[in-house]
Length: 196
Image 1 (cartoon, one colour):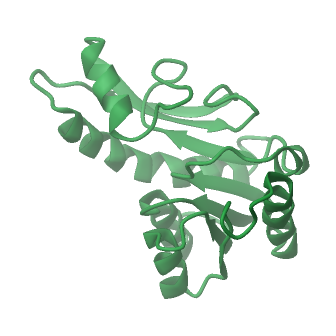
Image 2 (spheres, rainbow, N blue to C red):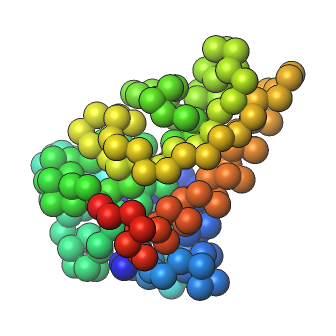
């Protein structure tokens, strides 16, 4: 199973997946990394791992349609089976979504359908969870569709919200679980336990 990554910033979930592949916990091969941020840590991680990497953005391709086509072309060139979004902050174009329908995964730092949707990413999610008085949050791996955070849920894990939690403290505990759940869910796809 060839995995292609789309990442905008740090790429720590991408690294967790790469590490799982190297350790033999995930029967897959990381084949390409695409970032819309030329300075992203994700591109640096890709270079360090010897994985082909591409900077494709509104700057390299001002026309949204040509950017969509460029992303799709790179994923096809590298024979990607499954696309893993790892903190990718842009909406995917219709061509890429159509070609890889049902094979694009995202990870969200809350228990969807709660605390998802446009603008709900990073620390904002944890702030919303605490503001809502939730006693638990968690991690969701889901399929990507045209609507933010609305695709079918593949896996979830719960993380308690502690009394007096700050968004930052909650984010740290959730991230630990993200790094476990994402590779584990991909392995269930690789073994056929989850059929896409």
